[in-house]
Amino acid sequence: MMIFFRASTVLLLCFYLCLAESRAENLSSDYALSQVDAGKVLPLSEIIRLHPLLSESRLLDIELVREDDGVLIYEFEILQSENIVLELEIDAATGQLLREGFEE
Image (cartoon, rainbow, N blue to C red; front, side):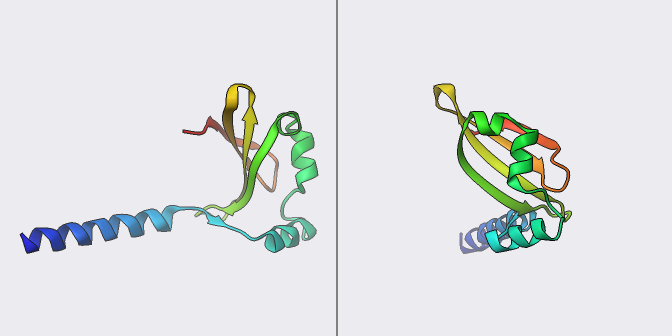
């Protein structure tokens, strides 16, 4: 019984570490501003101009994250009618929409 408990604990720990390593890194607002100033990412005003849906909806959350491959992405959560939350991932350097989906 004790061997099963140890083995399952080790497996759970390995699973958690794999998940933690594959997650995107959240970046600070100071870092985001430095990247905008350096011209490496588009300012939010430009992203909103490229994607009018962002200004037409209620913005709930926005984050700048670095993916595992180093790409910087803006992640938006916006509230639409009927209390539906839409998630958008936009390439911070180009403004290209990468993914759109509903929050689960």
